[in-house]
Length: 188
View 1: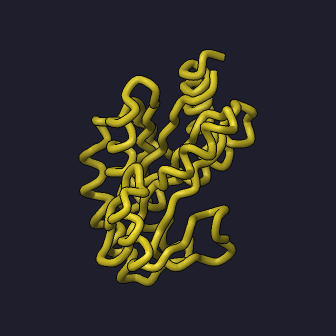
View 2: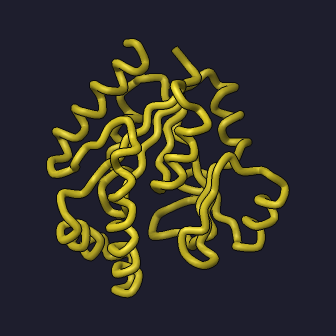
């Protein structure tokens, strides 16, 4: 069945993007919803593939025109959101829509789509391990990592509001748990 919504949310560095990339290769008639952000691209990220990169002013202009399904200012002038046009594009293609979004965005999408959506919370094994993962990633300054850890501690309190919580302490196990839940949700 097409048109279902599958949401993955987690603190930064918990492994949700790696998991989503794997799941998109499993042949479940799913397409990735590219989010918009006002942050700069990292490394090999590309506009329109990884994110739609907007300036903070462009982002605010789209907010004023109600072009977002959901959005959040995660840090000052650092916005993330889901463009309504992206949902329309994927729906026209007859696909199920996969979201890789922050915790509040995931809850907002779940609230809007209710039973049509399955919301996953991917949790790190601990904040210490999360800190190490962010350090090993090498994409953020120590100050940004400290901000991300503080935010992760807060975001973990929202885990019970999601349909499924998976502690990502073993990526292969996490993949299998997510695959099983998705297959059941999609009716395969």
